[in-house]
Length: 115
Image 1 (cartoon, rainbow, N blue to C red):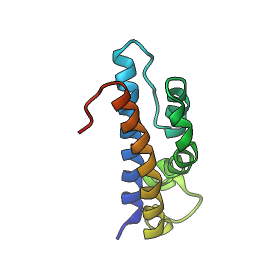
Image 2 (image 1 turned 120 degrees about the vertical axis):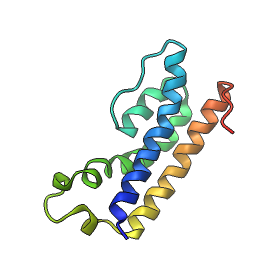
Image 3 (image 1 turned 90 degrees about the vertical axis):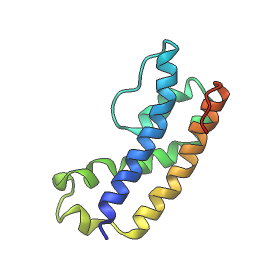
Image 4 (image 1 turned 90 degrees about the horizontal axis):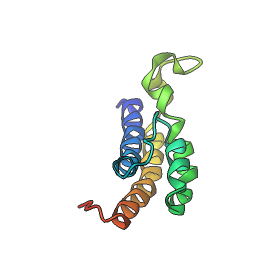
């Protein structure tokens, strides 16, 4: 199994989860979050809801997967599929759960149906 691709997709899911919240803010006149950093998105969203501070550590860990799982030259040696394991994927999934939960809670606070 290529854990690299799966781990990369988990990081992408976190980006999309956080992107939902800034999209709602953008629609109400706020600046949109640019880039792919989950930590940066969380930092911007903390100004609107302190609950995003709860997932800072998780977003830091997920950000570490973005470049090396996507680009073969993102690692000092070897190939990404050789560097990641099933445990890396499981850890990324565990980090994603609270990120999604905070995003969902925030969107519900704004009256957005997240069902």
